[in-house]
Image (cartoon, rainbow, N blue to C red):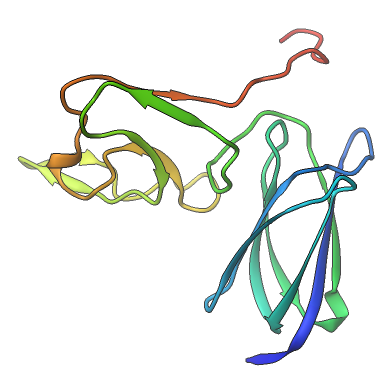
Length: 171
């Protein structure tokens, strides 16, 4: 139920280096509202919330394992700290800046919840994301719900953000 605003904050830190994770992504999902925000240079993000309730909280940064937690947010849980594991992982629940291009007139890559399609008795677009990751989002081509959105008349390419492997011993 709506209540007086509660300032809620999350502090994200690198589990190994024990430092704040600047410009990390957070997504809060509630049955009545969704919020997306980023941490500041010290790894902290804050928001005024009006619903004292359970939220799904997705947190992550490119080069770190994304985490999801069920979090009761009320005046007693106004700050939550989380240490993220440095590793490359992306289940697409957060937007880490993948890009795409191509020459196709239809069917470009897009990040979203898949809209399934059956054509001639075959699944041509998936109905759901894989069950082993977070959030239900994935990259699919032509996610419009019909065969007219399939890749047509050209190619489509999907590019990840840059992998920085400078600190890896054996990449």
